[in-house]
Length: 147
Image 1 (cartoon, helix red, strand yellow):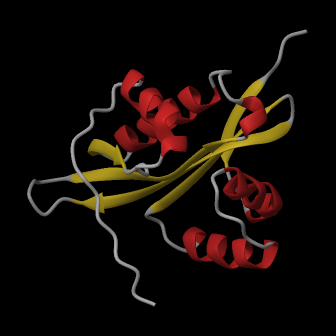
Image 2: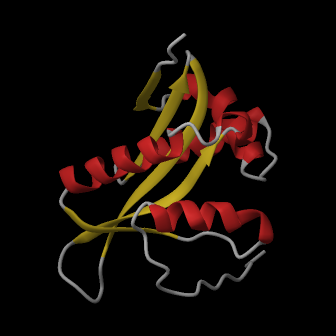
């Protein structure tokens, strides 16, 4: 039996699946919260959300945002969310989502693409995946909660 993978743009009809994927990423949320977040994201032309389905089941997502360099001419794309359902990892789904993200980035004229990934033990495999996909460890990220 051959399994079919498809990558497509996310829509508001995918809220339940996106919510479930956020939980796989370690961010529990409700359908209402995800609907509100997704509506905000979808209202901005600088965001692009892709979903991966495997055998007609949504099992992966990548969220992208276009940004402009201060230090260089041009623009870049930032991967702000990438997740594959833990039951469907190591099947090439994440690799295909990254490939589609890079295609979109080139299409809109981006000269670079980047991401941040948490410094937690459970992210070690993700870090290996990014490195094997051609992403270089380049900076240290900092965050501060304002609420």
